[in-house]
Image (cartoon, rainbow, N blue to C red; front, side):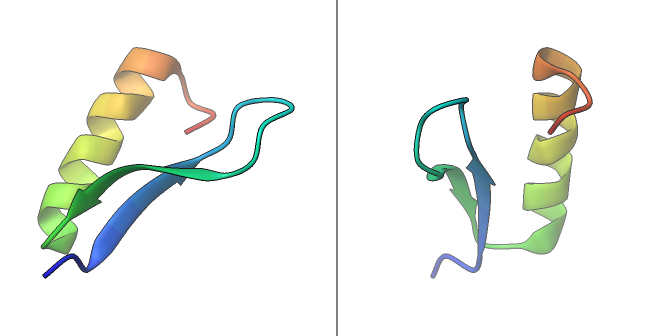
Length: 42
C-alpha cells in the first residue's frame, strides 16, 4: 500500500506525483536524493 508521495511542480505546469513509497524512511531518503540532484528547492 502506498502511504507517501513526493509531489512537485514545474513552472507553468500543474502539480504532479513524482514518486510513491510505502514507508516514511524510504520517502525521506529519496527526497534527499532528489534535493542533491535538483537543488534545495525540493
